Length: 283
Image 1 (tube, one colour):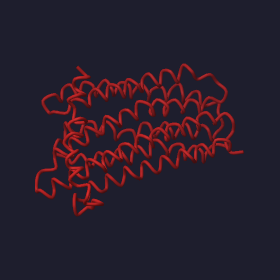
Image 2 (tube, helix red, strand yellow; image 1 turned 90 degrees about the horizontal axis):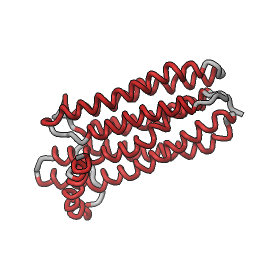
Image 3 (cartoon, rainbow, N blue to C red; image 1 turned 45 degrees about the vertical axis):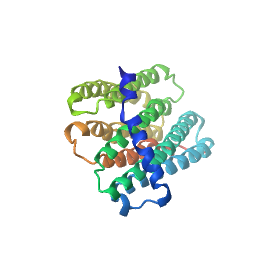
Image 4 (cartoon, rainbow, N blue to C red; image 1 turned 90 degrees about the vertical axis):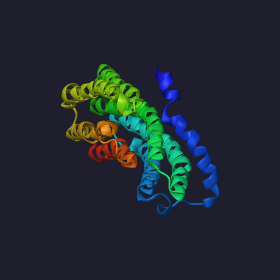
């Protein structure tokens, strides 16, 4: 059933519908706000900035790896892997939006036809690639927090539970994203609830087991773990809100959600590590 849903999803429909627009618009050159409006240009900008910033963070984290004490190097290596993977996915998503969505929007605007379906299909097509990214990067994001707090302790069991809860959150959310029509919002909400159970499991472990583990670390490491955990319960909140938008605000321009996700991913994948590096002891 899920495979059939994916095969009929907007990801394929959008690619097929946009192909003609790409060919027709190829000779036009650079698309501007005058062709498509402000919001699509903002989204395209945030895709590009996310790709560049995560690529830069990848290089920075690798360069800084040997500048921190040995017990923090594994966490910093994980951080480099996370932003490196994210940069790759954002390069691809940036291409989808710039090469397919913008030309399709420009063509529709030129012809005076509605752009609602184009924006909708673009969003629900690209969201699948976001989940591909999250399926790999978010388990690493939560795993690096106990690693930063380990201070010589074994953290395998804690990391395993965090990863399992994270996978439940992402996989359930991905299945729920395939239900995009108002007539099946009940199924979307059901899978969203299951995804929330995974998220709450992560929060519980971070503020019990990991918090207790960090007590034996130095003050700077404790502060880094504290703030990384806070990021999980605050900035991660944008994703369930975005997930619910098709249900409680079906008329909202989904380009807004695109932009919020792009900015949020930059903060959630890079900023906690930048902050942590500033807190831990350097050589």
